[in-house]
Length: 162
Image (cartoon, rainbow, N blue to C red; front, side, top):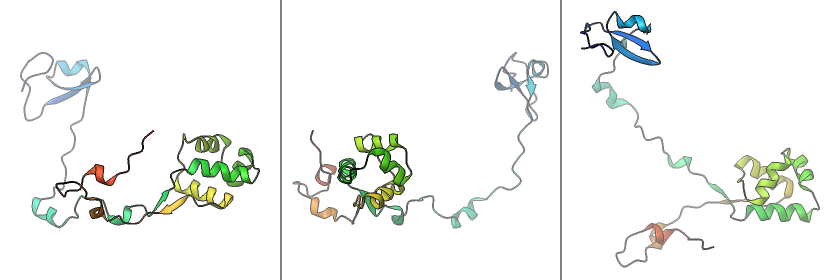
């Protein structure tokens, strides 16, 4: 092994690591004076052998229960605005009722921001409207309509045209 600065031979069993100008390098004893000597990282005391890894849980953290059961309706922003206006409330009034800033309500009503579930439920309670709809499982086989009989993304999704 060679010094990364001058090229001299370095002891391979116990190399000197020094931080010089922000970089950790393997250096000889003379060049180690140019920077700060770094401690060698301790070796792990316990190493798991390959046989014991068989009993560990799989890395796939995705579970079907993690899928949302409710989804925000498509035109939530106009529904919130219409409900607020039907009660003759200003954005300030609504903000006080649900304890939110007027700027947040403004961004939601303009469609620039999508509220999270907690905030959506606040809107539902204050305005007495339904903003969340239940999401049911979709039978994807009903969308097969191409000549090959295979499902494609184009068969399943609805494409919005402007």
